[in-house]
Image 1 (cartoon, rainbow, N blue to C red):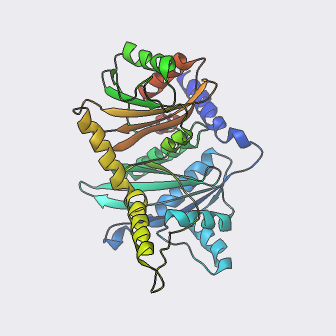
Image 2: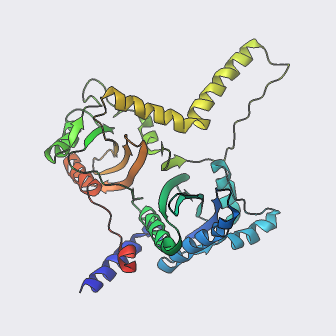
Image 3: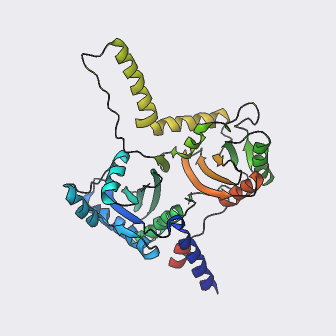
Length: 351
């Protein structure tokens, strides 16, 4: 009976993937996982990891997969070869050449106690977004368990709700909320958290100032932290600063200002965000454990969420398409999701 229930739940999970595009057969391209260490004895894993992830996902979904050797064959037509390291802005052009929907690549670093740190980047052509996550596991005998665990993270993220959760947020935690609603609606969002034992810290006023009319609120969807990130990627490439003997004093002054903006919000963006999180934490005397960003649609029937662990400065949860009959219902569903660990039929099956 238990095995039957497992099979049914696994079928329901996998059938939900790509539900918005049933007729099309998605294609996934897997680049190298680059060896970040100086020990070349680990170089063989640069292709073993992507090949293993590709095979695992192909065995579960009806997808076309391009492994590194296939990608090299495609790129040879353009007199190119698959690189070990790509800048994010290079991916849109690469995926266009491959005629793929998704490109997955990353790196790994062997660390102490026979462990390995894997950083995986998942680029989606449809959303033009890059999801980056970090996972640490043991080498040798447990290498395939590590592959299964990372495959499960990919499965959850490939769900139409884009679920990623590295940590549960328990009752009793100190949380602060930023949302795009105000007034009584914001109170309706707050109440379920307080009723269910969360220590809610007031971060956003419900009448004096609110973000309900801010067109830029959706920018909060994109979060860049040290280990896990969700970014918007374009193919525009790096910004070039032109100057020469023809440039006057005012031009150089403006150029310096632009360079500082570019440095702060692009090349050093991770550090800028980290500093911002530290300021919030200190301003509230370290009482905030987690910062929740909740975007609710105009009909108040659907929401997306981002959660940052302020102690570790990490993105620990992202999800979209959290439904509810009203704001209170949405809040309760958010709490249900964030307080329960995502079950993994794949790993249960492996055990």
